Length: 195
Image (cartoon, rainbow, N blue to C red):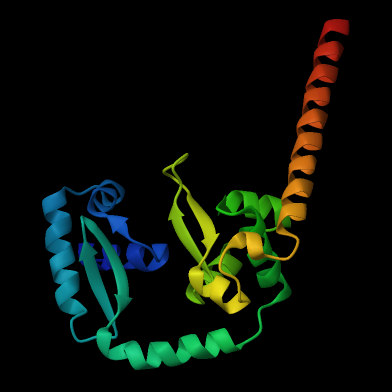
């Protein structure tokens, strides 16, 4: 038996875990906006007395927790924050602190592994935040939160240990990498000419 449209929307919103525009829902589900609006209304009614709620704002929809769940959610957040970060979490936070705002793809490249789970954990803990990427609307940038800076006891990123030295080393690395890439391109051109 096929899922109802409101159930399909619920599944998509759960999977995405972030706001999704009505236009995107209409495109993905191959429906018109009126059908999406009706299904969102039905989903909102279904979830009215549940722990999860449908939230609508500026043409976007997202699943969130019911207000009555706030005390329990706060308890879980405190528990999460009191646990130590994993080595991967510390590594990812360091990249965000010294290189941010930075895309997930660049974080993955630097770490050499997929960082999706680690980033989600840092977002939930309030240590990193996602912002729109002005260079590419299909991706986000990750940056440290004020909460993280406060936790570290600093008021700005330049107060981080050896911040300027690390920035210089990153710049040197970027310059060497660019020179190596340029050299490889020249070698390729020479090989093509010789063949």
